[in-house]
Length: 266
Length: 266
Image (cartoon, rainbow over all chains, first blue to last red):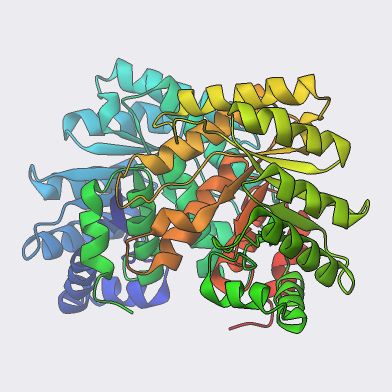
């Protein structure tokens, strides 16, 4: 499972402060902690919601350089704006990157997908379009189809594409968990080289004891074939759920990783 | 999820003593505790491994009568011998029962399956035959096919049959979890009216922190469509896993059961 650490996201006020104050030590610590906890990629989202596009581009360049000067862990450049994405990718200077994200809407397909080719980056494709998140697996699959077509047109190999089949709170509609997983299953079947990813914790929004629901949904998603998760890697219960789940689907040969993690814990 | 409480099993020494001493109070307490914890059926296995077949028949009659005199919860009559099964079913005197179990071998198909018809009981069908537990899902499905044929011949409706797709320790072969779940999925697809059941905790045998693995496997099985579980209902973590998992597959309308269980817990 590719864990993408979600903590550096400027929509959270503590992160916004770090970005605005150019607090390099705090930023780097956040990245290092996530890497040490098992994140394979560190997501970097510097959109504070205030200031100009140029401010966000500056922030992205600063954040990327600050982290990569001290840490080898690959970065996931996260923005709604293609210019900010390209600023981050350029700053990476050939180091491995992931782009988060494009939807199946024209602007993303025309401007974000080519960046994945140009910078040989992994690409997160959201299975939604300009009209929002489809309610059914079939409609989400249609969004994936459009992204696949754009990737083929721009020579982005499907093995580099992580489809996010989009998690909605189960508290507002108990059928939505199955829609997310069914979309995931269908994508794996239709595009075997493509990968899948989920930003998982939204599933439990509005419920008590959220970590129970998050862990349960993680297990189901692992069984459905999930390849990546955008989560807080410092959430030890959720990370333990990944370790346990991967044993059960045969991805942990001889249970070695599980034994290493839990042999000495009570 | 139909929870079948597994605690009254005379292969455990403490239960063996209760059976041998005809300790009615202790037996009843075990049954009542499991019912209170959410068991829909209470499994009754009185095979102590010593004594004659007649002894086991006596014990079964005693155990069934002792429990049903005070408790309405249906019983799951559990024995390898058809005569013991029938003794238990007769003692039930028309009350709802489950038979645990038949394999796809001639003796079971000829002698156990007809009991399900005669006593209108639910029937656990193990997806194995005289040669043991098949290694592949296809071979386990073939065992299910034989049980289905016998049920049709003896007019046992498939909606009354719970196929146990058999759990093996993941520590001895990491592929076996997927074989169990794949068999379950195939049975649900081929025989939509039929039910499925697992004796789950064997999956974690030989590993540390077994409850993690048990809960994770429960989530995957719930997603695969599991209808029943032969477990210890006093295992609060596993019962919580069922409650969490059923929310995610849409079986808990408006999350009511989940809210009731966890609203006030920290």
